[in-house]
Length: 402
Image (tube, rainbow, N blue to C red; front, top):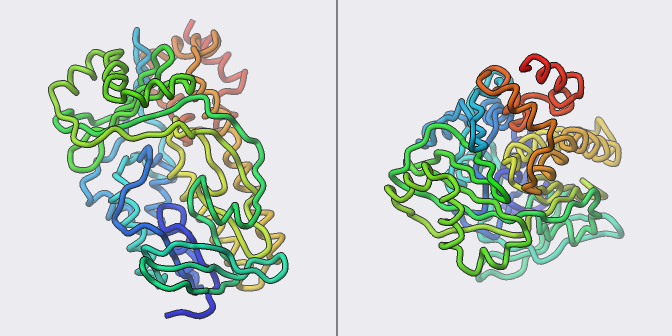
C-alpha cells in the first residue's frame, strides 16, 4: 500500500514504533520505515524505569515484555564501597517494577504492537532525503535494499532515527542546551552470574552497573572518564576486567560465569536538545533529546515523548489545534519534563566524587530502606528531583540522621 499518509515515522525502534502505534490507534494512516531489519540489536542501556513500564502497561504490551523472560526488578542498590544503599523506588502509576529487556526483544514487541494497530511497516528501507514544498517538509525519498528510489508523502514526517538523526539534519533542527561528553561506556553480557536487582557501583573515576536481562543473562556496564576513551578502546578486554576488579565480589562472579557476547559501547555520550518540530516535521526519542545513558533514562523518555507527540499530532490531524501551536506545546512539555534529570545525568556522567553535602545525605539514609528508596526513586524518575534534592528536604534528612 502506498500513497499519502498522515504521518511517516523514520526509525522503528522504541520511540518511532510507539509513536506510530499511538497515532494508528487514534485512527491515523501511518507509514513506519527503518533501515534495519527486525529483530536486531542496537546500543542501549536496556533499562526501563517504572514510568516507562507504566506506559507499556497503558498500551497493553507489558505482558509481552514480562512473557519474554526478562525478570522484573523491584529493588535497587547503590554500592559506594564502604556501604550500600538498598531500597525500592516508589511505584509510578501503580507500577513497582522496572525491566532491562534486550533490544532484540523490546523493539520487536513494540513494532508488533504498531503493526497490530494498522501501521504500515517497511524494514530495510533507507531514507535518502526529505521532500519539501517551500520550507514545508512533505514526505521522504528512499529505497529498500536493492530497490529503486521511491517517494512517499505525508502531512508530517517524524524523525525517530536516533542521536545522529538524518531527519533532524535535513530539516535543519537546531540543537541547544548542549553538554560535552564527559564519560564513555562499554557493556557486555554474562551467563552463570545470577542477579535479581540493579546495582550501581560508584568507584573512583568509574561507575559500574549490573542488571538482569533476558535468557538468564546479566548485563554489566562500565563508565570511564572521556579522557580515557582512546586507551580503553585500544584494549577493551583488559580495561573491562580491570574495572570489574574494583568490585571484587562482582569480578569473582563474572570469573565463575562466562562472557557470552562481545564488549560494545561508545564515547559519543554528550547531551543536547533539538528543536522538536517545524513545518511538516517533528522529532522524538534520541533524535530530539539525547544525554549520557548513565541514568538509563533513554527508553523511558522515548515512551513519554511518544505519548506527548502522538497527542500533539492527533490535535493537528483532527484540526483541533494549529500545527505550530501543537508542536510548540510538545517541545515545552518535553523540555520541562526532562531538564531536572538532564542536569542530574550530566552531573553523574562527570564521574566526580560526590560533594560533601551528598556524602552526608547518603550517610544519613544508610540503613533506612524507605529513605534509600526515595533517593533511588529520584534517579529512577519516580520521585521529583527538585523535590527530593531541595535544600530543606536534604537538611531534614541529614538532621534526622545525626
